[in-house]
Image (spheres, rainbow, N blue to C red):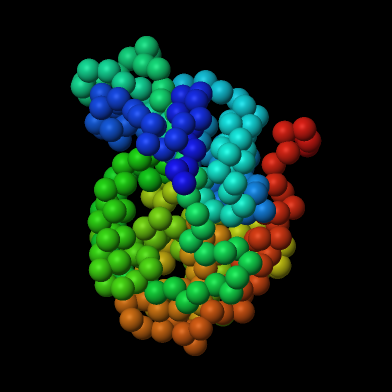
Length: 289
């Protein structure tokens, strides 16, 4: 059966979902997106995702013509129409369509569409062992904006796929690890969690944000620093986080075992704590802080 999608106010079969070839998202990647994890039929970290979406739109001067609650209702309807209990939800907003020109004006009408996908890994199942390969970080300088300018990530993740790895670990020209192809990266050394500081050099990951709150709840000491690739390879544990995978253990990088080569104690505790916290914080538009 075909999925139901959302396009500019309408729920359509995926075969009927259309966007103009003159859309600036298609021509210039002049658009932003959010990916949400869905489990128990609910959207994980919804409010934090929407806050990041609002920031990304503002950075590109794309108007946000809906409220957070309006978008919540739209997306929950999409989940219900697709009978999605667990999986992934994608939301895409472009500046709009017009004759091809690099400059833009204030009269574009944003195109908004969304769709669902099935899960990569079940939230409550035993997480798989994940292998990464290192690749050069070729991305543009404003990685903090969640734009659809993803060609460098496509190249990185395709290289990982060809090598039989799950994900790419991106390393800058100075040998410092930034993040993974479509996920945030962390490592444990000496019972401390090493995390790269939030700047425009990395995406401000939402699952990352909640996972770090979990680490604080568990009294795991955080060390904010940029780390060389060689430091990472000496880690006791490593992990990646993203909306579609939650928290996953990394057991190998470039074919070499990290720590014992098995999912680590801290990583598994953080994963289970993340899922518990995300469930406790499912968004309810009728409840205000």
